[in-house]
Length: 550
Image (cartoon, rainbow, N blue to C red; front, side, top):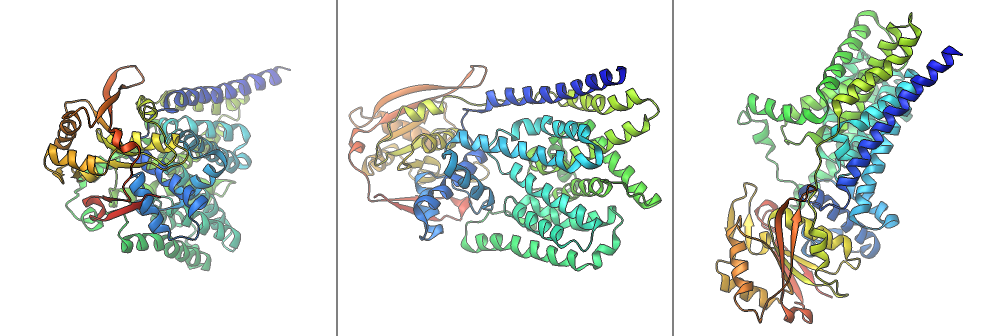
């Protein structure tokens, strides 16, 4: 009876840990849902909607021309800058749930839940279901995951495919002739690379994992060379095509590999990236990896789940190596694909702690919950915030059946947030939204401005000649000179442009950080230009794309 009561208490503590994680995500959802999408999130969402629209209305037409036309309407399409897999998954989900921002955020939450389930299933047999539950909860509790589960980003889908590749590769190392595991690894590897370029860390991974696992003979296996070559060839195809078509991401790999990016800068960037997980979890994970490698090499140990632990650690090391050699980003979320493998390493620490205390049954049974609680306490609640107000600004302009021609001249976060709100809330997707940072100026990657139209009168003539129906501005002080030209153009003669709304942009705390002002040109209600052409800027090679208003 006493043993049963203790078991119930330990299980209750375990479910309390899981409940605490769900509370953290409830908090994250309450903050993140309904906020405006900016920067990369806006590009990912717009690209997914574009693919959905192509599947619904464009099948049989040239996909590149369709994408360019959609880019004029909602100028945030980023296929080429990133590979297409995430957008295909988004599009399939939108066909069921609808192409809204909320749907995109729910998809991220489902991916997070699916990856947590993958962690649980991969550990259940070797570590026991209780430790598997705690490891899955720990994965979800990481601050980076509290954010990623409600962001519209491709890192989580990359993490799903990478973890599938890691599990399949562990199976393959234990069973070198298991062709099904080889095919699963190849399929997950290609899918990961076609989701995000950071998955090319699978290259060093397939070299590091057999070494750490002590499976040297695997390098002679046909199931090493065959899937590896397939992943490299199929994964590279899209990247080569996008570069040839002029739509690829303009990264100077030669410069990244050169001594211009010195050791100190590489280490600094990697240090920022590694804030993806709490320090204790990273240290614990590397310590577990060192211990497991020692026992495999020194004692030839081979307990159930050992190879998965080694391979999970190998992926974490491979991603560190990859991002040190190619310092591509300062964003901790690039390590999202390493969070599930870190949870596997943490599970092994729980197994060792439980087994080391086997002579004290109560403490042994409680130790995984205690270790999980300590790691969860360090994780805590992630600092989250969202800007609100852009949805109201989007709705302050009507959604006519044939669309509206809109110029957005706010700051750059405001541009992307307003475009995605119009896209999400206007079901017909007939708007044409001009970004002032494309049509009035060229803003390069260092935020330097080159004006395309150099005077307020010329800007006014451009707006009236199109004619643009709505102009959306921030309040001064302005960051760029084109914004001052637009303000002078729309306030010069009240007969041409009339203010229709002034709306605040606020943080979650209620602090007002900006103000959106909307002006309407009545002449734009009934007339549309036959063709709208948009220069995409120096970052896209100076290409000009066009949309024919139907």
